[in-house]
Image (cartoon, rainbow, N blue to C red):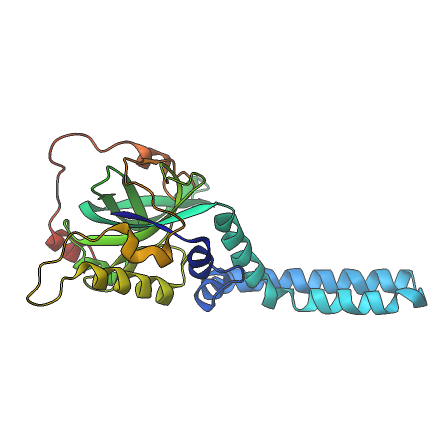
Length: 278
């Protein structure tokens, strides 16, 4: 199921200014914090040194604001980083709410970096840093299929093939026939999110999910005709037919994940395999 979202709803889900979750993610670990502090100290020292070399009275207020700007760099730079990430997504003109299902789930070890060390015998040793990733192959009834990869977490052991997933897809075409970016993946059955970066305001997205679920559910004792797209017109720009869409997502998944799903039954790992690997 692919439902177009209005531009207003799109901008609510991905705000211009970074959210708290995005700021926390951009804050990083201690080495990232230490790097920002060193940049602040270096910038502040440079401004003070230039002020000492060029003691121009008219530039005193400018030096003050530049010094304040440099001194607090370590604090506001995560906001800037996350906001720029949001802007890169908001540049896309159209968005849609996609509900599909997981056709395969598996775990891989991905290379995230290398370190060169010298052992006691003087030999150069290359140490590979690897991280375990969960991979979800997703498809929906319209023919869209994609693969999502994220860092493995303990709650992911509850994920199994056949689970319903929901996410937002972005496109520059009004009919959403070519998908260029995707966001976090939400599993409504158990409330799990799968993503390395929190692109969405998750409370807003879950509200949209509940609204659509409520519109899909027939009242007790009544037969309900299949829901037309008009029932969620507050989320839409116009009535657009469902159709087969093509995924061109490149920056949020590895290159080899763009292949179309091969015909036939995919190999399905049981959820117990995830239990053993967590």
